[in-house]
Length: 315
Image (cartoon, rainbow, N blue to C red):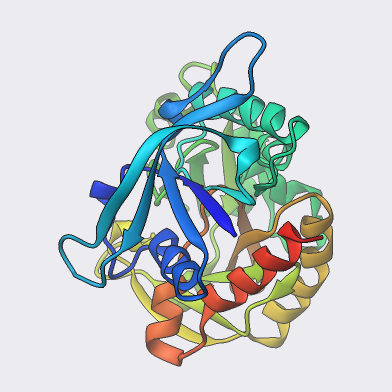
């Protein structure tokens, strides 16, 4: 297959942990050819197909100069066997427009994973509200009074913006309510922006588990991201320690319930975040943790993913 990866600049990759790199490596190992571009390289001219300025690359196996450009030029997205949208959040207006262009490319014959409409219609934090049986007490609102009422009921809460990533903008407010008003003002911008508020889950001390679902099926190991020092956040980007472990019975129940639903919607890969027994996010833009799980358990998630990609692209 010819695979196009739409991602952040290759020069920014940390290949020892990057999931997109792990996908590329496994794809090349199987004989597939690799091309790359950034969302800013995608364009659509009147009367033409959605195209991009792409670089055709090979992986060198080196640590520093880890890729070599074989050629570059303009190519229609429909000319590839699979297009992988792997741009990291934030899901801003440019990401939104990119999903529309990718959806047009689909109409022209491109096979895009995850599906652009699914990316657009599946906000990663808000999506959990569809599955109340798997989440803890949660409120989404712009109303400061509603947030204060939620705090009065649950006493120990987490507040976060709907468009954050990597633990950015997450606050914990305990029973004393210290700085609650200021935090609300910071997050909701005087009622202009929605905030997610959740009851604090003490099980975060055991890790914020990333449960991967590939092709509708759970990967048998998750990565528990354990907060370090005085942090409440387990995110690796916030200094959390990643510990791979087998799925618990509850993790498996969640993944087996959500997997077929997400796959039906065009989400070939999803990362479900679980604290204790509760889902806190469903990540679909560029789920990670492939390499951490492989390094600690030998479970080759990249191979499972390319299996699913080959099956989906050829279906």
